[in-house]
Length: 360
Picture 1 (cartoon, rainbow, N blue to C red):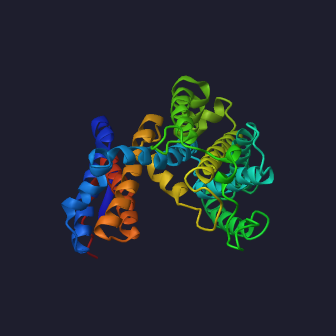
Picture 2 (tube, rainbow, N blue to C red):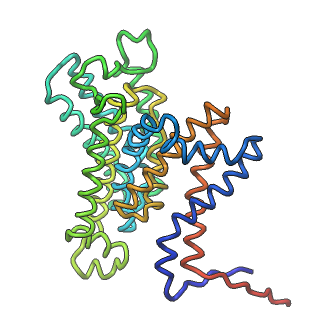
Picture 3 (cartoon, helix red, strand yellow):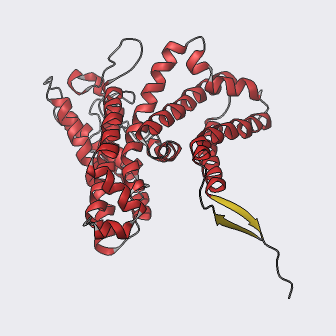
């Protein structure tokens, strides 16, 4: 039998190196996966990690890395507040979708307005839509002690079906030949999230992401709110004695993470996606969970982890086109990152003891 025994003092250096070890193990096992698929593992790993940064078309790929990293980082920053406080929001994908719907609906309702106030109103509506969707599991947790993990996760499927109903109903493009999609946001500039630097694809969402990383770092490390978050997660009883309301913390954390996820959804649908459709959900809300834990729930770590995951997205597109690999293979590769991170974490925090089974 195997028993896990907590270590008295886990190594700080090993805790810091855990993400790097997880990445190396992912490369090793991922290479074996590519061998099983009949591909050169060294070429595949190079295309995933090297070509997007230093390859022939690196200038274009670097812009794409920032574009794909922006929603992951924004969502993960919101999730990190709750995770630090012991509040588990697994439904950021649903909040991402609802933010896109609410913000997009404001823009579509104002078509063909060219007012400069339209896009800020859409961003606000997107954040509000995501926040309200995140507050549903918060209310049920406070009122009925419902498990926020299950409620937030089930609400993802509600959001997906709500999106399908909206793009085939009220938000359907009247000139779209009955396709299940909205009007393209590029069709009126006031509702479009254009690229800031020509040829890079970098949009406003990338700048907002950078600002949020700095803001969240200050909030978590230099503000009483960050201290309350850490206290609630590490010592719940001490937090209660200090006057920190658990219910208020649940509302704030789930509302904040929902707002950031909704904002990310709005930036995505008005930028790279271009319109609402049944294929809009991109899995960013689920991948952001990996980003949050890979980044150790720290804003700077989340920023670096988001860039790393974005590199695998861009690299995955490269190997799909050049090596004819299925999209599922890169999804498995990304999943390995979380698996190995958790596995190495266990070995750092616990030591394994083998117990002999007693013979009766």
